[in-house]
Every structure is written in C-alpha cells, then in structure tokens.
Length: 363
Image (tube, rainbow, N blue to C red):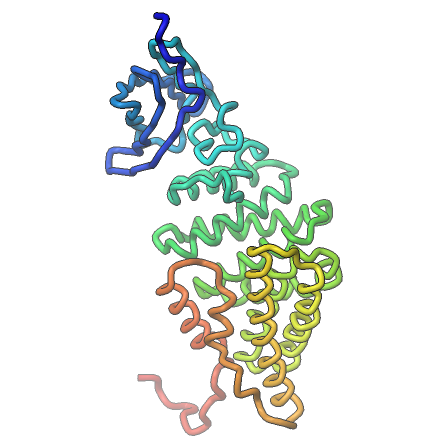
C-alpha cells in the first residue's frame, strides 16, 4: 500500500500490573495491528507463543506465574507497513530490559539491572527474585565477581529490611554467606566503595532483625578503610553514615573509647566532602546529608569524651534515636522506627545483678 505508515521504531512498555494470575505489562506500538510474543523457560528454546491484538496502538502482554524465571525471547510487530522484531538488544539500556533477562542469570547481564536506577527492575518482588537467583549463582561459582556480590547483597539487604515476609532464616543466611564470599574476594576488588556499601547494608540488616554481633562486625570492618575512603570522595557518604551508626551503638553499650574512635573517624572524613563535591543538585543534597551526619557525630563524640574522662557534660544535642534513624536507608517509616526502638532496647549492656535477688527462684 502506497500510503501505509511504517512501523514505529519504538516499542514502549508503559506499566506493570501483578494480579493473582501473573504479571501483565501494558504495551504501546503505533502503526501495528498485532504482536506475537515468544516466551522461554529457563533455556533458550521457545516454550510458549502469545498473540496480542492492539487497539489504538495499545495491548497487554500476560506473563505466567513463573515470571521472572521465564523470559521474553522476542516480540514481532505486524502492521500494514511491514514487520519488525524486538529482542534484548533493543532494550540493552532500557528500564524494561528485565523482560528479556537471560536465564540462567549471568552476572554481566543482570547485575546492572539490580543496582542501577536507570535500568532497575521496577517491580520489587521481581527485583528480589532476580537478586536471590543471582546470589545463588554467585555462591556456586569458585571465584565469584566481588563487585557483583556487593551489588546484589546491597539490593537484598534493603529489600529484606522493607519486607519482613521475605526475611526467612534461609534468606538471611544467604546474605551472610554473600558477605563472607565478598570478604574472600575483597583483596582483588580494589574498589573501596563496594567494601563500604556491602558492609553498611549488611549492618542495617543485622540491626533490623536483631543480629547485634554481625551488625557490629560489619561496621567495625569499615573503620580500617578510612585512608582509602579519603581518596575516593564518592565513598564518603557510606563511611560517615556507618561510623555514626557504629558510634551510636557503642555509646548505647557504654563502650566510650570505641564510640569516640568511630565518631572521630567520621568527623575527620566528613570534612573532605565539600572539597570534592561537584556542583550539582544531587551532590549538594548528599553533601548536606554528610554534614548533618557529621553534626550528629560531633555531638556523640562530646558525649563519649565526657563519659570517658569524667570531664565536661554529654552534649545536649546528642539523641541516639535521631542519630540511628538518620543512618538507616530502607524506606518504610514504621520499620525504621521499630528498628530504632529495638536498638535502644537491645544494645545497652545487661544490668548488673541485684545481690538481693541472688539465690531466689525465678517466678
């Protein structure tokens, strides 16, 4: 037909719905009558074909309950102007690339999607499922990619913090196994950002679910990274936040010298932030957060010094609840408050035994 319009060069995915029967993706493609979608399971052979009729350039792709463990192999658009096939290559840097994600998951192909906001999988359950699948793949490799471990672990930590229903003992054990795997590979990672990021995320997970020792260990392992952090301004945020959380928890445990040491480090490194900050809105916001964190650290340091030396008084600006809450990066406000209150209850040292109660039966 001489007046036929060519098929639109861009197939758009507009939104995702997740009813009980599976996932549904709304599609837009101008100048097209219908789409034919090939789906695969865990291999590369097609296992299902779905035809989608388009009305005014819109249609709906239904994905089975096994998603995300199946994937779209290709979408072929048919219209009066001809046909066009869409594959993963057309969505290499697009937000919906996860539809074409390779199974079994490959680190180089999927790790970008679970950590980068530009391509991150938009549905949280699917993001979690992909990250767990990738975690399993990494843990079965003899020498896994350390940066990929850090990326995936951070995603899992924050999802588990915000979704208690996912935080099974098996899921938590997988995160701690990932942290151990990262430690084993850390010598060849050579990126302090990831050394800080994974520990900061794991510390928050430990705090969220009452694993004091893992939380404190992860935070303490950040302290020796001071010198490397000074040379990498992008890592300052995590370092300062981690030191504030560590200092606050040490103060609650009345470990005054250890608290002062952690808070001292945060104050020292925070003052490098303005020197290296770029002049952008995002950098300015992060810088203001770093400096506010530094203010909390100074108040906590004064409190630790007063308790340690017996001279002076604790800072009237020090509020452990506010300080701890400011370090937590997961999103649910109710869970944030629960985590802070749990820390305030669990981190003080046990009260000394009452000599009057010795020998008495416990009711």
